Length: 553
Image 1 (cartoon, one colour):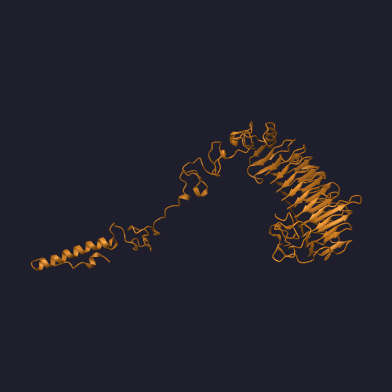
Image 2 (spheres, rainbow, N blue to C red):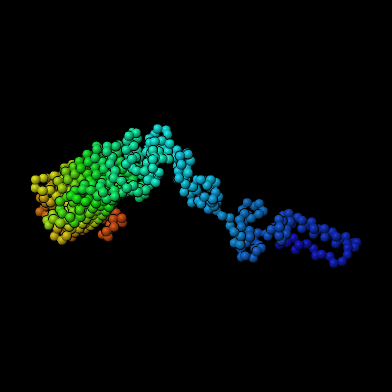
């Protein structure tokens, strides 16, 4: 509506009294009325509005949308303009105001300073140069009140640095060995290593130094160049010596091609140990231990070899070879390794504690016509009473003779009694007519098999000699569940033959989609030995790898 539509018609003749006066009064009234209407409704007072713009709801540009849509704050102008003919303002998060090639959305933490962005190197200046949320001043690993980048401890190593460094942040050493030696000499307990490939064969030589990568094992590689063990601890190193966050590869040695530990107890944590090769009689493609007690934790030990397809003697333990000592082996993935015996692990006379490991896809094969290829996943020979193998998942392993999953074997003059409890042993394989596709007790050994799930192995689930004890295990779904001189133990000593009812598992060779925890209503729940340690929730022990005192993964 416009003000003109409410005004009198314009006059077409001259004004004269008294009619002219009367008409003049009407004209003045119309003018007054228009002024009042404009004050009360400015949007209607003028077809262009009081400020010369098109009124709300009018498509002045004829582009199919209104030029002004809302006036949320009642301040007489539209708050938003959805006119598709006018470009929208860019999002400030997508602007590169300082021209450094990074926007705030892409991680630029200060878009007014081109020297601060995710592509910058971190400098020793107290500023977060690379926008990772930390400045160099945030790190003081030795707690001496001096930032690491200004300190000579931790010692820094960077393969890309110029030669002649001194181990400081700005002048790092180029080799890990130099970093270890210098750190030990100056009583610094820590070496930090930047990303890159370091072609070295490292020997700690008694140095109690924690060596850690800045960027993890995928980015930080120690390559042994195929000429010896990649990393060696053999001079009494304690838990203060460590290797953390590296890929260890391309080692070639008789015992321990990737890492060798003798008479020492270091920490080996968070590494990828892969593609190492035993090159003569010995063992331990990935790791070789001799009278050693290290903590081996949270590593991926894969694709290593210890004489697969070679002679029976001296080709043992594709992933880890353990001779004596009392190592702790926990939370590792030991997968796709190969050996004559013990594709994943080979153990003799050890008091090892081995728990929470995935042992999958390992192979054992050698040329001995009788004892060829024992223990596709694990081969325990002359097992100590102190050996505890508990709460592990052993799946998809193969042995060319006996014990596709786990073999426990001793010759006539030995009679060790290791304990294997709360494990999952499933989808393992041995040839038709072989002993123990899943779990084997053979020779003079007297092991204890307790609270294990043994499921879907070929050709048999459990093979027992006369000395083995098998109690409260669930054994089902195997080609034949029980074999050996004791016959079937189903229904005896608490052993079950029920379907296990795990959460999810399939024989597809892919461990990543398996979940061996008991499902709702599972026969595994509260079915373990009543005398065993309780589950973490305080209830009776479940059968399988999520039961007992180590049941919380």
